[in-house]
Length: 259
Image 1: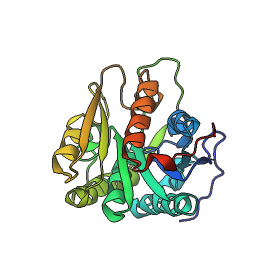
Image 2: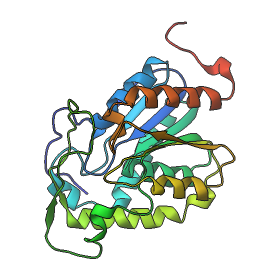
Image 3: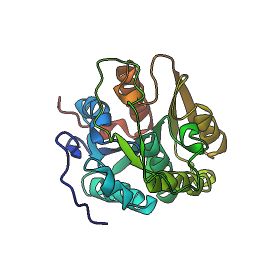
Image 4: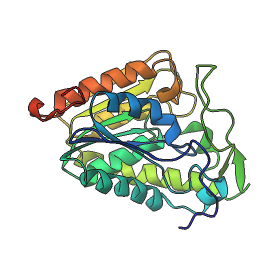
């Protein structure tokens, strides 16, 4: 699809060049790379190469998103994966909310992905959207304020969501559930105990059904849905870096900016 609106200021994708270990990060539904930029910058400061992709139809206008299918969003993340492959020898993938769903889908397709980190990934149910399932009216629905506990956090996000895009998100979840048993890479999942958008049982389902021998869930007790911008964002970043370091393989491949 072709976007008709310009990218909003601050909603651009970001690329932070480091060593030959790449981390691909995806934002969620109706969000932008801005929501995961803190995590990306923290990880890059440890020496990694980071790319925060912008999903098609996001960060411009919700009318652009209306023209997208979930295949467009999958393609967006795949393009980011191939971009990082040109710069890095090893790739990890990370995603929040629908970005986590897309990360899971990608990990099921590419066996060379070394590990996966998901934050409040949507997989089984989004209660606020359940009443809209299979409906086509109204054309747009109010998104409401982002689900962030920290009062000083500001997320660039759409105020409205096309009902057609909500249907595409639900279809993506259905499609991705079928790929879970093909995933074997090490997996770290974060789940907010109090999430008003994607309940933690979504994460429980993911961890229960993937075939990874190494998989762990970390519960967040002081963050709501957009945890990458909430009170525990530093904790998520720290734990993610520990996960990366543990699963890189040959530690001598780590070439930080300190050398």
